[in-house]
Every structure is written in C-alpha cells, then in structure tokens.
Amino acid sequence: MKKLKILLVQARFNRDYGITNPPLGLMYISAALKEAGFREVRVLHLDALRDPEAALRRELEDWRPDVAGIGALTAQEGSLRACAALARKALPACYIVAGGPHPTHYYDECLQDRNIDAVIRGEGEAAMLALARALAEGRRPEAAGGLCLRAGGGELVLSEPAYCADLDRLPMPDWGAVDHRVYQRLVPCSIFAHGTRHMPLMTSRGCPYECVYCHKIMGRRYRAHSPARVLAEIRELYEKFGTRCIEIMDDNVNLDKNRFREILRLLAAEKLKGLTVYLAGGLHAGTLDEETIDLFRPAGIPYFAIGVETGSPRMQEYIKKRLDLPRVKALIAYAAARRIFTHGLFMIGIPGETEEDIKATRDFAVSSELHTALISTCFVYRRTELARLLGPAAEMTGAGDVNHYSGYSGFSACAGVAPERLRRLKFLMDLAFYYSPRRLWRILRDLPRYSPGLAWELFKRLASRSFPLR
Image (cartoon, rainbow, N blue to C red; front, side, top):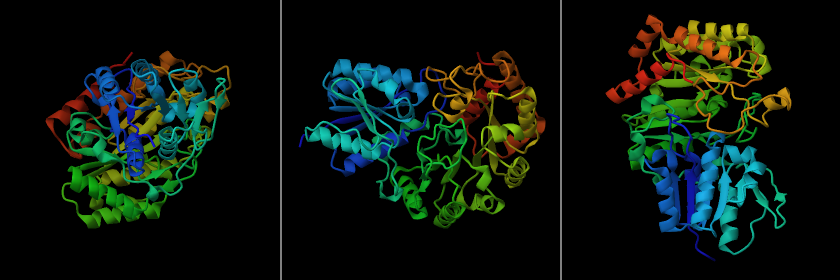
C-alpha cells in the first residue's frame, strides 16, 4: 500500500473578516487519518499566515503532497478555487478534494472546476479516510458516504452526505496540527479570548430545528459527545497544550439540557485553575432556563451568545425560529443580573420584513439587558429553504467575498425594505444600542477579562458600528 502525504488546507477569506478560529474540522479529519495509519498529514490554515499564498506554494513544491484537501465556507469560494488551481499547477498528479460548507451545498458547481477531482458533502472524517485508503491501494475512489466524483465521461457521480452517529468513537481533534501560539495574536469568535491560549471545542453536531435561512451543514439529527468525553478533551487541552480559554462552538450546545448541565457540573467539580469557557456558538433560547444559568459561574463561564434573530413575532414565525420573546428577554435579564456577559445575535433584511418588524427588533435589543449585540445582514443563500420560498426570480447571495455579516453590504434585493434604507436602519440600530451610558457602564463593569490589546479590539468594533461601512 502506497504511503500518502496529505495536506489539509483551510481556504482564506477574500476580505479581512476580523475573526480567525483554528480549523477544527480539519483537525478532526487529521486525527481520523492518523489514527488509521496515515501518519504524514499536515494542516495549513491560510488565514493564520502572514503570506498564505507563498506558504501554500512552499508546502506544495517542497513537501509534494499526494492529496490536497481544501475546506471552505461560501465566502471562501474564491480562495478554494485559487488553492485548487495552485495545487494543480504545482503538482499535476495531486488528487484535489474540496469539503466544508460550500462544497457540501454547491458540490456540482465545485466539480465543474477541472482542478477539483472530488467533493466531500457533510462531515469529512469517514469520507476522507475512505478516499485515502482507495488512493493508497491504487483503487479508483467510489462515490459513497458523502464523496462525490466525476466519472470518466465527465458526468457527476453523487452520494448523500454522511454523518457520524456516535461522536465518542471519533478520535480527539489533532490539536498538535496547528501552532497554538499563532492564535494568541488573532481574534477568535469570542473576542474576550483574544491574547490567550485558546482553542475551539465542538461537543455536538446536527440541529433538528427548521430555521429557513440555515444550510443545516451537519444534518437534522442531533448527536452529542458524552459529558465525560467533553471533559476529557478540555483536560487534554488544559494539561498538554496550556489552553486557558475554551470556545464551545456548537449550534445547540444546550439542546439536551440534562447533558449540558452535567458538563457544567463536571467542569465545576474539576476546578481547572485559570480556565475560562466561552459559549460562542450561541445558546438556543428555547431550551435555556434559570437552573442552567445558575451553573455558569461555578463552571467558569462568564460569557454566552444567544441567537434571537428578530424581535418581531411575525418574522419569528416566518423564519421558523419561533421563540417566546418575552421569555428570552427575561432569561437575558436573569443572566445579566448575575454579571454574566450576554451577547445577542440579530439579523435584519429578511425577505418580507417591514420597517415595523425592524423597529420591533431594535426595540427588543435596546430594551434588553444584553451587554453587546451583533446586528447582522440576512444573507439568502441558494438551496436553503428561504431561497426556495422566494423562488427563482429573487436575487440571492451565493458566493463572492461578502463575508462579514456585521457590515453594511450583502443585503438581498428581495428584502422587504430597500438596501439603502436597510443600511440606514442598521446604522441607527447600532447607535441606539451602543450609545447608552448605562449599557456602556455595564459593559465595562462586567468585562470577562481586560488587557490593552483586548481594549483596542473592542474599540475598533464599536467604531465600526458607529460609521456605516460601504
């Protein structure tokens, strides 16, 4: 069996995104490959490098991998294609496979690029391992378990995404595949981890909810690590790598309330000195309660993000979020009263949304006890339920370099309010929310941590919300 060199590349954003988290998905794939005996695996995260193109070219020309796996979000599509072209030019015989959110949903478009040999849809561990085994044995890979290929005549041979049923059977992510020190100077999803030894953690996958704007990258079936496995991952990061900040990135970490509470109790009992855990992925408000919030401080959790999306009951129903808004506001107040820093996630520009709906969102955010809020642009991605509801005539966001949801661009032309007016309303919402002496005082009082570098990053974000970005 041939020994393979496998290079895993995380594509880069085409503009300055401002947030750089370690490529957790590629670290999972690297761990699965190494556990199966493929020892020569490297991970290259382009957004973490000062000269990413030169670094990729150097890896290709000096190390000469047999396989290049490229992960990409939709906003990284341009980089995905550039990486594939660079790999094909440098190593014509290299097998190039694309994976991640963008190839999962736009697999046919990716395979129209002759520089890409295959696409992995859904989770990548098993599919990448099957691909590597086939290539090592000299066999043609089969389209199965999420792997999609071009046949000899050029037609596409597709398979449905595959999802791991028992997450505890997966090896721990290959934490050693990246340089942890690099990420200390970069800003992660939880800004308060900036400047610390931090790493992301995923304790569950899949989401059973029906939000119409979501791609549902990891499927509808909820699967979760056991509390013991979660604690084992945290302990390994803490003891072996000196990690002192953990970002939990799940879409629905608290979907199973009892499991989540057990994780919190184990964290509290473990007493890992100096460890802070940030709930960055967004707690689901529908399964949050006061008993769970009471466990945050003992577990070392001073911060959480919560997805509200819209303060309009009508739009809550339209996007199928269906939150009890008064209940959500009461939970935010309960957490804030306990000096837990709360961050709200909202969006405007939803198709069919009126100015009255946007006013309801503004009023909810401004009157809440949230410390900070992100007012995002609603991107309408093709092949989501929202895109299907709108029909083929609507203008939709598909690819390109619009990637920062908090900016003042990317509003869909099919929104119920004109894009120019939306930009104005978003600007006014940001001002109304942040320029409150009481809120600014609460932000300063309840900061989870402070450093000069962190203060500068917070100032830049406040400034970006004070002046419309074009």
